[in-house]
Length: 184
Figure 1 (spheres, helix red, strand yellow):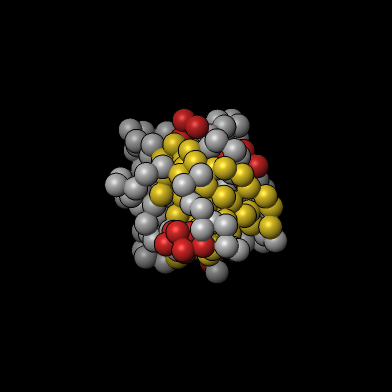
Figure 2 (spheres, rainbow, N blue to C red):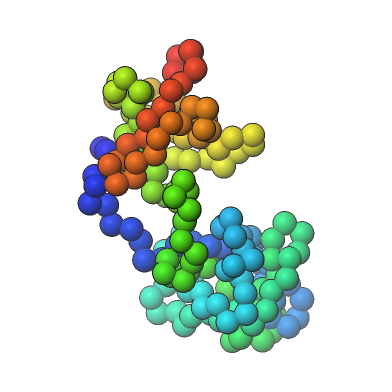
């Protein structure tokens, strides 16, 4: 199923995972799920609580960042309403979401990875390769998992030398794959 031009964008985006309580004063170790944690985990930022799947918990009160600091490969975040380890432990394992409107707008050549899911991948000559099912963040390049019409799965590097155009509104990604890539 290919994406259509009428795709609705989510109001909230997942920006972090609450991994575990840290210390006794209510700090939590947060694994950032954003390219700009320095813009998200700032004093006064209102974040929303999601469940263990990243689905917005409509009943939960918003969490206001009191302060944060880099720690190892994540952030230690203290929220205004979380003052002790016991309260922090109740939040561990859940996700943090931010309102899309509160986040910096994307640059013209940027895209949220969730927007790629469901897009049709075509070669420059218009040949349909398949539909994007997943995006894997790997080194040296992120990978698109594409399911072909015949059911075969392709892993295609999400790199400028291969991906020539991303048209979220038009529901397609145009690629110029090197010889043999789609035969793997």
